[in-house]
Length: 142
Image (cartoon, rainbow, N blue to C red):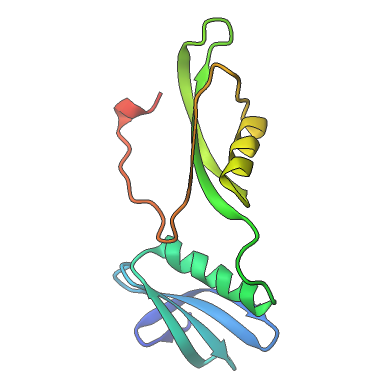
C-alpha cells in the first residue's frame, strides 16, 4: 500500500496522466483526496472528517477532470412506509438511496422502483456532502 504524509492511499481513479487518490489516517478519523502524478507526486489536497465526503470529493474531482462541472445525478436518501393495500395501515418501512438530478425525480424513482402506493408515505432528502450521522435502534426497525 502507498502512503503519503501519514495517510494510507485506499482508493484511486485515473484520468489520463493524472490520478486522484483518497487517503485515510491510521485512526480512521481524517481523510484526504489529492491529485497525483507519476505515482508519488501528491498535490492539491482536500481534507475531510467524513469518509463519505472524501469519497464524494474523489468522484467529483475525477468527473471534473473528464470535463464535467458536477455529477449529473446526486444521491437522495428515501424512506417510505409499506402499507396494507386494503386498510392503508403501515406494516413496515423501506429505506435506501436513489440517484437523481432533482428531488422530484428521486421521489418518482423511489415510488416506481420500490412499490409505492397511495396509502404509503414517502420522505426524500438529498444526501449532504458530509454524509449522515445517525443511530438506529432495534425498536425503530419494523
